[in-house]
Amino acid sequence: MGKPTRTKPDGPGGPLNFEEKMGRLEEIVRILEAGDRPLEESMALFEEGVRLSNECKDVLEKTEKKITVLLSHQENEIPFPEEGKPDHGENGRFSET
Picture 1: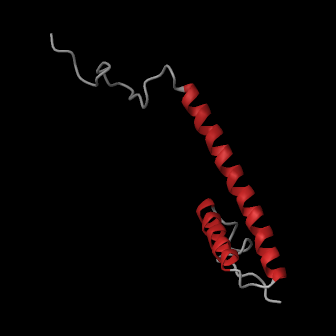
Picture 2 (picture 1 turned 90 degrees about the vertical axis):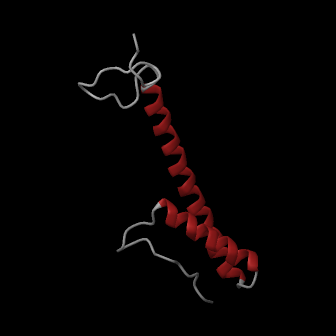
Picture 3 (picture 1 turned 60 degrees about the vertical axis):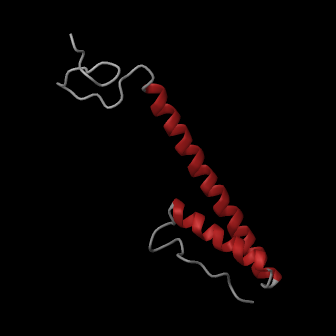
């Protein structure tokens, strides 16, 4: 039986990044939905798809946690404060007096 094709294997070129994993997952879905592959190959593709799906989910969860932490540290701070620059007030403009 033929082995599933891969767009870029993990290994010498390094592991797939998030976007590549999502692309491969979409490719696997298209292949499986076509329904023209032998059972063994379909099962191998399904297993790869489950693994990629779990890896992508982990990346998204870690990213969400990181964003939450970053935002929680900034609740009472002005975003991107510039050292040595005057505070322009809430609307970003100098007060006219």
